[in-house]
Length: 561
Image: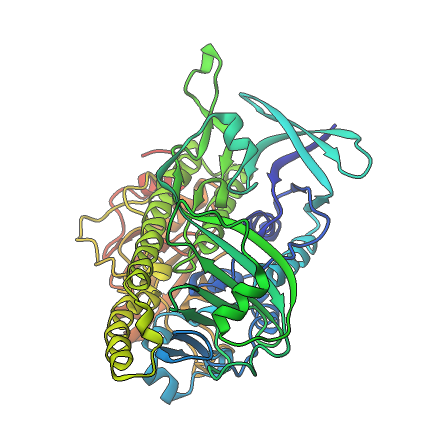
């Protein structure tokens, strides 16, 4: 029997991120995955700024950029009747090169770059998984077991006993773990076995995605290289996505009628119709799927026996096993990455001996509301796109005065709908409210604006970003680089956090201190003392040391007041 503190089931981006987070923190884990190679279909295609901030801690930023769209390609979102037809609207965003170099004229055009070192990064899941796989494999404490099918599990008060089968040979192995994390996708067998149902709107409307290679795609239309190409012809509603910006693309064909079947769509006909002209391509894959807005009712198992009826269990859900999204907004995979980091540092704290029971209880208390928030945002985005598409008449393609009028009307609606692509607040502005391991200070909660970031150290918020060196390119240092490994107490001016630091150390929690004398940075942190957790979220703040440092240390480490 194999033994491990933590067993991760599922080797997609969320499972691999969790394995990497644990390995980075020196915590042993085993990851089992049925596939023997990364996914071939791109599936998710966007990393938000917060995910890139988290990945920067591992040192894989450049590897992600190298596998993403070409560095000098501006991120363009276009809206057209057909790709070779009339353009209705266009949104331009900074390229990877501009995000790295951050010249003044780019900063002036894109206010999002003031809130984070990163912008959106277009990278297909099929290109991201190998990077995360190499990262996880680089840690001695991580054991990756691909080609193993998860069979079943038995849970008790001390851990989980799981059975896995070698896909090639059929041989069965048993793994004993203290904790099991289900990262096994939207059809999670573990979630189903636990009897946990999904809440929310559920399945919305059907889609079919075509993944194809084509050297002619960029030449057959006049839109140029972009990351998203929306098609508003009534017989071809959908969006093309650049996977590598060279020869790999996907087309998501939207079916506004939820009762319509997607199984009998001819790829040649659908792609030719959406582009408006025939072109040569090689079909690599077809996927039939639905928009969703679904969040698991519970994110942790409950021990079923009479003696411990209702006690918190040893199994957690993360990623698609815990929530399903519409892709409109690009936050589904990013929410799962946030799950992995939140749960990862908390499991590491418990395994290190300083994390108390409330720390693991806080995982659901913190992440579930974010999944509800983000999935509702994504579903609302989809509703707006669908509404404008549904209101687009065939006359939108006419080369006539009537066609001009219709295009002007639809373009105005698209401009209204397209505000959803200003989503920095969605990715960066979430905060943990009413968490049992965060100490509130009674101040009003800052606005939660999906389109912009209100930087704050309000307890539960992501600690704010500002450059701390004269080099303000991505090669420079930001305040975010202070956070990640341990708790950090930011002290501005002559504030003295020694008592709180000592109280955390007394509990065994790793804690550092950072003196900030720069007036601009001091103002950014809003209070003279700010305690930031290992995941970069504020746990406590105050202008004076806490009256009871031991109580604060107990709360933020999950050991009660």
